[in-house]
Image (spheres, rainbow, N blue to C red):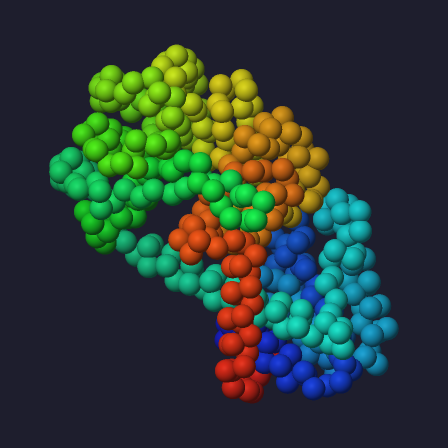
Length: 428
């Protein structure tokens, strides 16, 4: 039961349009979102999802309900109050079919967590917001895929271009390609307070400036080589730069090989003890594991000179294998992703929470925070430090999380008022 591309593309907007038409129904309708995306094993098996869709499509047809097959593999069913009992029975049957999935073993109340219910009589606004968010998420996913397709059409960098690339890096104006992103702590009012700024050179900016049309990410080792060359340029730039922001605490993401180079020693020689104490060196876990002995030497050198160490590139999958104390690091950067909550609340929750406690949540920086969801989950886990574009937005606008939410709600209200009714294509 594969979905036609055009039909799939219309489902989220069709759901939103259908809900808008039901606003004056007098509360005679219910809706349910079956979260097939929360499954752990079956979510990766198309034939299992096809059977689930077929089961619900038959129920929808029998009871004159409207079924929407969403981009994220969830199913959304909108039905009349008279069909509540039959729909509940159908959802229970679906849960029984799927009960061998680890999700149902890992969740204390899995069947309730599997379905989100909405009563249009007293929950219309909540349902409308859910549908609007699905439309937005679908648009963002499609935009990401389009960008990925464009990126894949870029030509991989060749060895013949390497000499020209190295020369270009040596002569590049890093001020145009160097970004600063704050690592923040949230105060009691929800306003982010920057503690230090990470300095990094955007590889995408480097590509667009020096190598338009070429894919510098296609070869892992060539990319690593380029970052090492860029490190050398960054270190030289820092040694000569009199930017006032560099006089305060900052972190530097760098390769271990670059730490042990003469260029870093030259920079180190220019810094007094208080300045070294304010600098955090961020190292990728992948780089550490390539040569642990080299890292151990670099660690002792950095700690002896007064620098602090941050372990970067940690995901929920690698977190249980990280021992911050043994590695001599002060901070650990954990990458936010949309799957983090399901992992923290799923079958691996004890393992992940134990790993966080061993590391100390107060020593964890949750990075790539692109929405308030990341800040909310981080706070639930005891994490105090955050970094990402959502924090950048709060800082630039000088507003709190609550004010950002109020602005978003107001914008959505204006959008609803200005939207014109549209005819939806609803599958049944």
